[in-house]
Image (cartoon, rainbow, N blue to C red):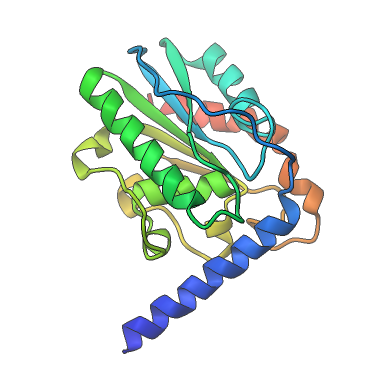
Length: 218
């Protein structure tokens, strides 16, 4: 009974964090979806964009981050846009995101045995990434598809921005902690509980620190 109460309380904290996210993350209409990648570059950069975030990988984080990674990585890379609604009004959004990201990683791992992955999540996309990694508070939501343990070593780095799970005090599982960079802008209501909604759409300052973090783990 005590465990059930704890889970219910944590679910409520997640709902509260998502409510804040919904208020500040109205980016406008999302663009079309992307098919699974087929090539075998040395690094596959897999990006889950934020709620209704414009741009291909996401104009706030994904697009500028991948451009910087492409320039800085010592090996060739390719990008993948997670195919999911990125809509907090769609109750299946996070589940569909975890399903697509996990399925993509499994497909690539099977077809490209030497490929490694950089996982990127912004805002709602950070929650999706947490689910793929098996962060407990996300997996209790139900319908979450997490990465099989035998593929854990293929994940070179995880880069999270404006992460709602950070706001409620949860982190990625310990096995990924040393490979995870989590970036939160000062005053961002979504990841810090601040009072500056505009901070949630300004992560330009975090691009090169995140790139350096990822390159150091290749």
